Length: 202
Image (cartoon, rainbow, N blue to C red):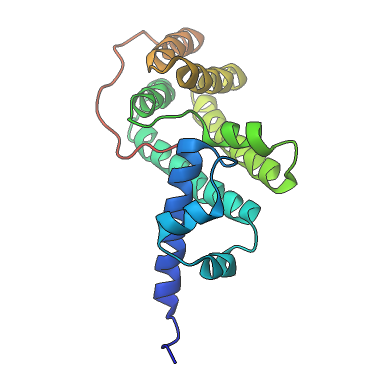
């Protein structure tokens, strides 16, 4: 009999599965990707995949949940390096612009999932709404620290920049949104930052 799988092996296999599924779902769309393609990309047999996730919907939710933690964590790590509250808010748009310029950028994974499954999957819809609330609260906290009551417009500018960048295929919307936010905050307009910020996945 084969030796029982260790906890560490289970962890590694689960991460490999999520990595493969995320790349496929983000790159091509959830509905265009069959579970057999996930099997090939992950190197795991279907029987083992379904032990981790009983249904494709469960796998989609897990991919979105893990991506949310990473995406917002990378954003926070970048923004919170900035000391001045107004500049910190502008750093959100610097980070977004760098993400938009990454190879393979296909817009917001949660908006994409909503477009495909939001009308038919309560679990996916709940995960999308959870991410958007968390991102909203993240942005709002940074804006509130400036003392200027413009959290909602800033959040909407960030969301609009993501959608427009995905459609247009360029990073310019982040620059335009940054300029608008600087005006809302009364921050003197500086050149956008150019430093990198890691893997920038979203």
